[in-house]
Length: 351
Image (cartoon, rainbow, N blue to C red; front, side):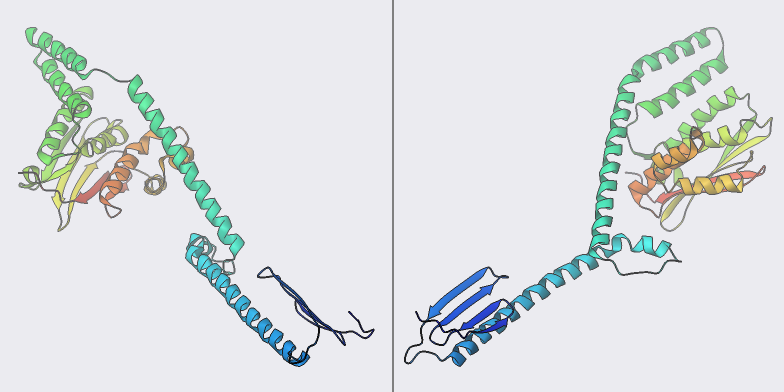
């Protein structure tokens, strides 16, 4: 093969054309597709001219460029769709920083926030599993045979009756019924009539304990007790909270009013006491605490968590069961009154 001393190189992207006077060497490399084409051809009669060959190669290069462009555009569309889909992960965070200048989300920030979200979800799952195991261990370690408790209370009541201690007998019977309701009843819902009976037994014990220094009353529409059902263990903690944090330190004249009424779609229970009341700061704190996780609340309040745990637990139970539009609200005027109001949907008693 005779090679001329004069070579002409034309380079375009990754395609190199080498023209010899008596031989045409074509080296075509498309790195994007991983193609490699080497061709060594002597000019022959009837064969393509150099110009025609260059034109064909140019068209091939143009076609490959268009295909490459389309593939790149498709990848960019996928990236844009990914960012748009997950931009809401940190939109709220941007909105909170009113003074900051908003910048569109980028790939690295989107991935960072997604990783943060996943880590938080995993941590929350581990925490809930740990709490569940602790609750199971606590339940096993503190498990009491309810029959032993009932039999012991019945023995005390029988002894009181034999010795003409009627008041002790009545209190023991009421306490036995309170424990029976708290321990053995597995129903999630019960008629409001049943809950009123439970409160009567509970208040009989509390009045005996505090030497009748407070009284209580029901203000209930006549048809409600036998018509509607309510979640069990909702009213009693509200009454207990009113006694413990409102009336316990009141010398005399304490009063608890329990109201029940309905609207078009809601059943409303309101427990009002004329005790110490709650300061504005404490009231605001409790309202906020009912909207955060128990772990955050415990961390925020240190060891003084008992005052709000009952309200927080009831609020969480109702919202998890019936939705966020239901739950507990608080209102208070220090040294005058405090009202705890709980709402849930209308639940008709089973016929």
